[in-house]
Every structure is written in structure tokens, then in C-alpha cells.
Length: 389
Image (cartoon, rainbow, N blue to C red):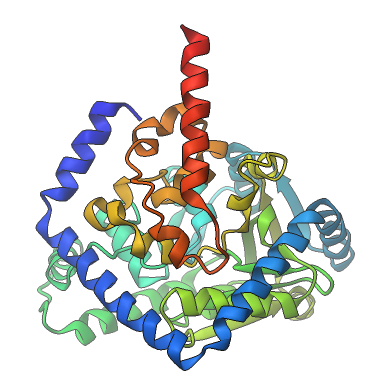
């Protein structure tokens, strides 16, 4: 991203009072919620330390887990695809889906990373996001501003206006229940008209292949249960030996995301879906991730559990939202992860926006030292620039 374009994005967001107030409200609620959650569940702190160990051990045997998962999936008759980059993942998915059809899709940062929805729409598929926040982003043709709450920058007034423009009827911004009921009714019809479901995974247990999913709206359950054909899109970092480890990660993720307990924790055993006649395909994305594992300076970035706590605490994020960070993953951790996906050159503006104040480290349940990695990335960037001179 060019510096001029980045500065325009910053200026535009800072001038958007509605977006800034949306983030301020959410951050304020989060700070109160996380304080109460830790007081109510003090064991969460030790559980987070255990989750870091689980992540470290799982990543250390990543290739073994990947090979084992492939073998287990193929023995069940599940399509298994390892995509080395985003283009390969898109090609696999389009080959799986065929020429046309209707798709219901759950929120997935990996799908955001590869531009899946836009790609499928351009290919002629009818695609609907089933998470309300992502649905708002889809209608607005906007980008998510947070990995947990994608429409954090949309007020009820802005949502009502958007719905009115798209659906050609009046919506009362003060009737939030009415807005939600309309969305639920609209998207429910789409489930039963769909040919395919596309979901992500918070974690994938390998021993007895299963996906664990965290959600609050019940939409994911319908997304994988209603269509006959299911595509599970995830990344190589999500693999853990068993569902037991996945559950521990899920508890820490949801609590540090600001929920005492998430609305739903779904454990989908692939074998049970196959026995019910579902056609399942699993697409696992690398896209530079295993290069992170090989780089001791940035290895910690692979430990991220995508709870979003660091973003709520980030001084810059509170000012400019997801303008700071990568195209899919906002804030400082997003800069680090994205540098391995898209290359460091595209991230220089965000790289030098970080204040290095360490608030993200204090918030992170698995103690990822984001500022020290940002400093190393800056050094790497300067080295690259000098080599071109």
C-alpha cells in the first residue's frame, strides 16, 4: 500500500465520527467485560498459559499432524486439499463447487484473507454471509474492522440506513430487535435454498478429525447442517492433536474476546457428517505460514489464537480501526502475519504506525511480544530498501 493511500485511509477514518464512536463504545464495554471475566474465572489466566504450551507443542509437530489429518480424512472419504497460497485455495474451492450454485458462508478470517466471497461472486455464485456482522460488511462492500466483531464501526443508525437502501423499505434504527429479526428471517430462507455451505474452524482436532467452532448467533450450525455439500476452509496453524486441546483453546479465546461463555461451541466430527450423507471437502491454507515457523524472530506470531484482545487495547487501533494492519488481519499482529502472506513491502506504512507501547502484550492471553517483532520487521524493511539502492 502506498503511503499516500494509507494516509488518506487514516484521515478518512479519523473524520468518520460514527465509526470512531462505534469503536470507542466497543472498547469501553470490552475493558469492563474482560475485567469482570477474569475476576469471575481467575483460573482463565493459568488456562491461557496451558493454551500457549498446547499451541507450541502443536506447532512443533505441525507437519506430522498435517500428514495424519490427510490420512484420516481420506480414509473417511473426505476431500483433502493443502493450498500453498490463496490462488491455489480459490482454485480448489471453485473446482469443488462446480459451475454455479447458492452458497451460505460463516465468518472466516481465512476466507477474508484470500478474498473468497468476492471471488465466488465474480464467478457467478450467489453467496450470503450468515454472521450478522459479516452480512453488514457484505451489503456495504466494506472491509471488516475486527477479527471478532467485523462491523464494530457501524452504528445502529448506519445499519438501518444500509438495510433501507438495499432492501427498499424503512427500518427504525431504535428497533434493534426488528433489524435482527429481519436479518434472521432473510438469511434463514437462504439456508434452505443453498447448495453449499462454507465454514472455517477455530481449531481442528486430528486424532478423530473434527472442527471446533465458536459462534454467538447459531448461524454456523445451520451453515454446516442444512446444505448437502460442505467446504471447511482453515489454515495450517489450527491443527491440534485432539478435541480436548481444541476445547481449552476455545475457552481462552472466547473469554479474552470478552465473553464469559460464547453462545455456541460446536464440535463437528467429520465421520458423523459423512454418515449422514454429507459431501465434505477440507481445504487447508499455508500462504506463508510455515515460513513463520521457520523464522525464530517471528515464531511467536504463530501462537496467536485470534481472540482480538490486543486490538481492543491497541492505542492506534482505537483511533483508526482496521486501517492499521493488513488487508484481513488488523493491528500489530496483523502486520506481522500479513508480512509473511503478502510481503513486507506492502506493509511499510502500518509498520511505522505502531507506537511500540506494549499494551497489546499486556492484553494477549498467550504473551505474544508484538512490539519486539515490529522492531525486527522495521530493521528487515530498512535492510531490504538499502539493498535496492
